[in-house]
Image 1 (cartoon, rainbow, N blue to C red):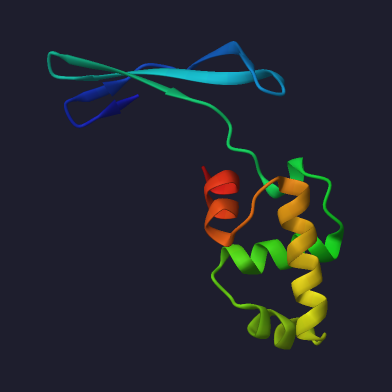
Image 2: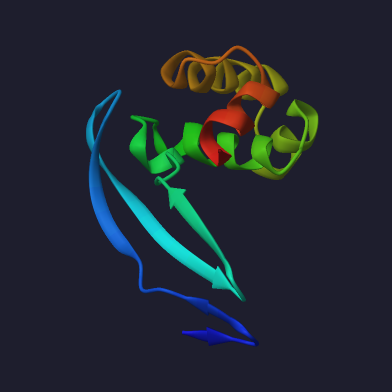
Length: 108
């Protein structure tokens, strides 16, 4: 693939041993003029990779968009306490203790 005076080599998929077993690692070589960069990326865990109920997943997605419990409760037409309980379940199942930790874990 050409990009101005740059060239990106076709990606190569490797396998690396991760925490939860073998995961795919993508290695891409980027050539810019006489410089060559090696970009290595791994898949970011998504909410789908955790065992969340549909309601917990919906609440997690809204938390990741920056909404507070009261805003989420209003959108979902449930009590704020219900959202707090679902948020606590999301944190427990993903293994985090805050919204910022949730974002860092799920979004990389």
